[in-house]
Amino acid sequence: MTLAFGRLTQDFVTFSNVALIYYGAQQSGNATAISVAQENLNSAATQFRTDAALDASYLSYIGISFVSYSLCII
Image (cartoon, rainbow, N blue to C red):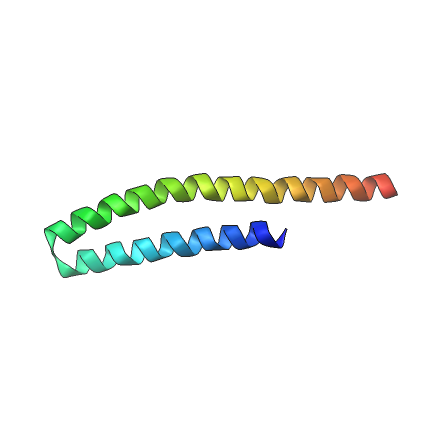
């Protein structure tokens, strides 16, 4: 469970870093840097949605298995 939560946390950190780079490009006013940062942000957003959904699913499956296991013991 710790690995799944760690991966989910890393997904948030990675997306946040890309978003900060995009924000920095916006502040610079450089059209080329903004364009490249926008492409990277779009790609990171797509990857984030996929990875975060997968990691959240793993956590849900683990939670369901814990509940069902604890009900079987009782």
